[in-house]
Length: 156
Image (cartoon, rainbow, N blue to C red; front, top):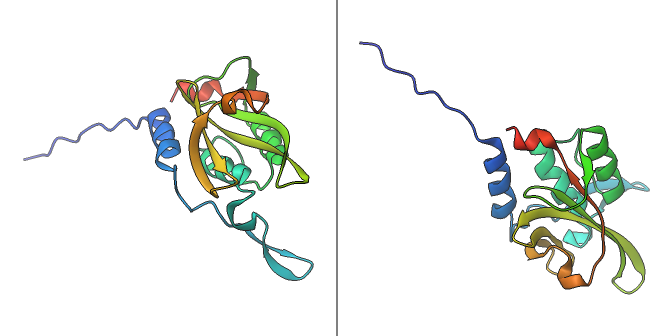
């Protein structure tokens, strides 16, 4: 007697959304070790500078860009080369890039995260050093530079 094979149709977009939501509170994205001037260094400073690494890791897992990155600018360049486009308003699953802001007293840093709907986003918290859920525009306190979306996501 032959067994009937079940047809499986993976739901990539829903899995992508779940990966973002399930990452909240994860310490997985805290470290990226590199050799700098002959010494091993955690270039993410224990999670303080992990936003691009976090976003690019999730996107790379879902084949939405070509590599994992440590900076917002290199992540955005890869996104643009990988078919992402600027959109006016965030949609579920889009990537948000916030303008450079002064953090930690002196350094200016851009920030990157995911829009999860309902006026909310998930990005790495420099203070807590792991991904957190928050207002998509930080309650009007941080300006959005660009919002990016890839049509291929809605087709998956």
